[in-house]
Length: 476
Image 1: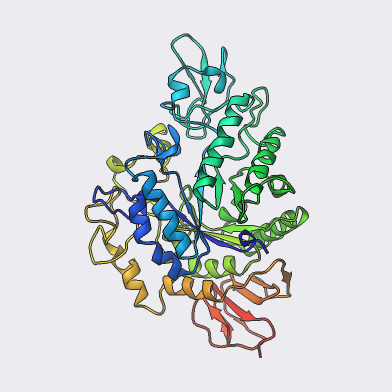
Image 2: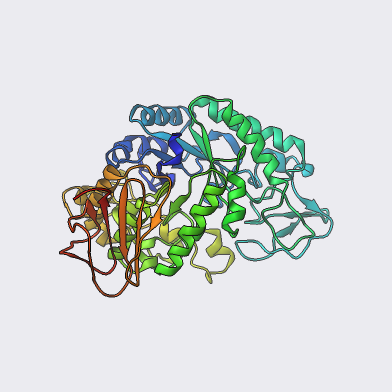
């Protein structure tokens, strides 16, 4: 079975993982020095958010050079060292590719190569996903499209030069040895300016079929995972049908409330849509764009239960750095330290995404908690002293130890079967485990051998509220 069909992949937001040079910003050498944490955790791969040359208007998702490392993160030699160490530890490495737009400081845009971008004499009424109009006017009166920030002009994927450039960019990183790509805004590359929707137009699939041929031409099960949002599961599945990309993120699961009926509906739809095209379903609870699920679900107890529910499902799972520590969203960042364009363009009406990007706490009892020899680019709460990697390694009941145990006991599965259960309980079996998650308000009796393989909180013959447990199939 290909590794990506059942992998657990850990997302690293490089600015906030670990800082080696003391400037307060995370970097590639910092990541390399901390890869042992991921090996100890038990994940299969890591996904690096963008580290390319960039003005950093949008945290590196505004790329000015796709074939080089931004100096704030290090050098290409640092990347090669990270890749080599990850592979030595048995970890695969996926890098972000940002094909929908470049930075406005990309040489193409600076040189005025307008045919490679979406320029029009008259704009339509589209709005930016970051707020405000999606069009900006240049000196001669034309307008260019930017679905995100004005510093992120959208590329014209009808232009063969754009397609050839990204084919070459993929090969550049594949030749260096990366194991795959996370494709930013994978459904947005083809535009229908007369339409009402930005995304999911038919022509995008031809692009991904071409990328799949490139990936398949390299040894080692190289893969790509698509970011496809605001799209129904059956439409998302088209991006991972035969001959296209390998996986797509499950935003319905990511955005689901703590509600058993909603979660069951999403799980059923996700499993069915993926099975129809022969792809694995994927599961994710947090990422660099969404409020952390400890806060979203209303506490650590539910977050622990959610982790075991997710990791008990068939397919592949994505973890966001810090969720294995139970980090909450930081809701009280001072206005002056916020950098997210969502915050800036909405004049503070939208909180933005900085609260889930606060640097990780590694050790010690005061900020920056071992993040690096200097400070941290966003302030860490003082009460994170109890949440550091160092502190949690010593606590057998910590969130970190729960994740380690879950990843050690997790076994690949490809399907699930629902079992009858009391109201509020999700109960299913895969080929390897029985999983019960009590999302209701009261404990429920356990009518099978009561000693679980693993549980998110203590049990005594009953499954408490906001608790998930695993049992090995056939045990007892």
